[in-house]
Amino acid sequence: MKDDLRFLRLWDLYSPLLTATQREITDLYFNYDLSLGEIAEQKGVSRQSVSDCLQKSRKQLEKYEEKLGFARIVAEMQAQIDALRKE
Image (cartoon, rainbow, N blue to C red; front, side, top):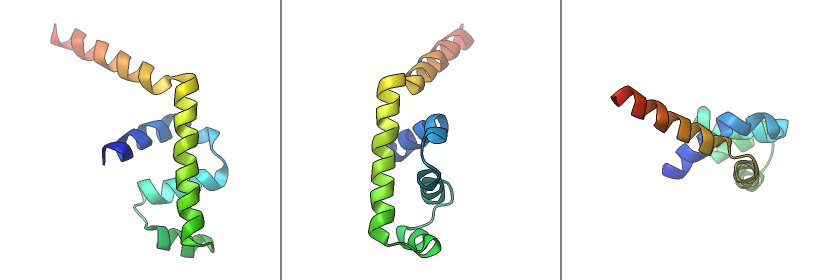
């Protein structure tokens, strides 16, 4: 669950950098809560190819975060905003 939340944060920031197919499959899986089998049937591919796409997308998003660091910056800014609100 924690990994899924992290993935969704990264997806919100970096999904435009994924291929159209990666974007569509990750959207169907995480935002529409479809199973691998349902996505595979809808796309006309195997469950394994859907799983491979999800795994590749996760790695790609992690690479983007490693290089660009937007999620870290957003988290730091949110922490600063929260601290200011408490004052």
